[in-house]
Image 1: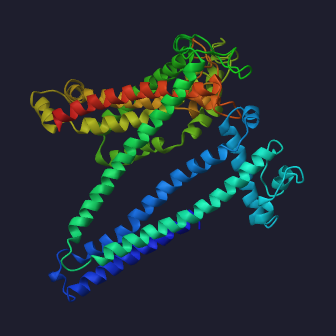
Image 2: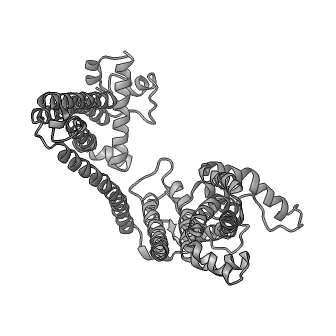
Image 3: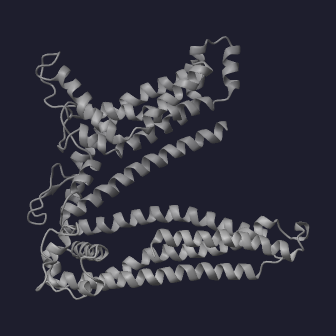
Length: 493
């Protein structure tokens, strides 16, 4: 049974439990809901949630545990020669899963039977050609070791899915029966439901924290492995970025300083565009625009925040870059060759700045509007003009919040990828020229993990070291920004 069908079944049991629990409570109270301890809806919710929540919990745990159990079991069947030839266990297991999925597709299309799939031998059957006939392409011939592991993988997956279905439905039925049995007019259903909802809210909050913890731990473990293969001093203080996948990192130079410089340089250009335009837009919308103009201009400005970054990247590549070349190129309007190509720091910075305008303007607008009107009225009462009030009263009062908005926009700029990939180029260099191509940490993370690579090599593991470095930088900016905003809110709310 597919996961979607299992979810549909337990949702159906939950709905049935709601109806049955509500009806049983009313029957126990003689049809008069005034005799019940709680409203009828609480009795129904208790039975419905008792059927739904345990079943979903079992399903989620099973979906996380089953792949781990199967992978650990099947990986033990792989020979050392097979692992050494592929480079790592993860790459071999990827081939095993691909072959197993191909066998499932062949069985579903009627090409072979389940028994024939279990009895396949690479010596007598061209497995690669067989799977290619059902639309599963393999890069190399299937070894006997990989085929046996894939067959075992299939068997364990089928059995796991069967047991999963039985366990989830059993959990739903058990919760349904237990809660239905205790349902009567004296049962404190409201208290139980409210405690259950509180537990769900705590679980949701904990899930967000645990997800962050899982991300950090995955970065840390792989970063530690990277620093076992590559010196930390060369990584943090190296002035050259020149990875080479030949020789497992022996000739690679993986210094992060050129990438950090490109990241900060492009972000600085973006902020020089976004902060003045966004702040001026916020001042106009909050202090000068009429209500009608504000109701139209503010949503239109915030539309920029909803445009996908890949669209901004294409805009940088096809429009802004050629436009800058036409002005600063050899044959441009200025007659000097400051810019030799369309990909440059200035290209990515300008487009990224446009993308950040709604972040700065929207946050600044809300912060300026939060300044108490009494401050404005007091300034007007002392004879100040509107511009003087904005300049000498409103902006100083809103300055901590505005600084927080700018820092949040900066962290957004530092983490941007697609605009940099398409607009700034791929050259890792230390240069002050804004018309030269550069790259950033995020762009190199993408390039290091794109395509077939040896994930046991420093050139692949360096992506995790880059990621945790970027994580620390953006986390520090966000903490500082939230501290400033919180301090501002405590003062003026």
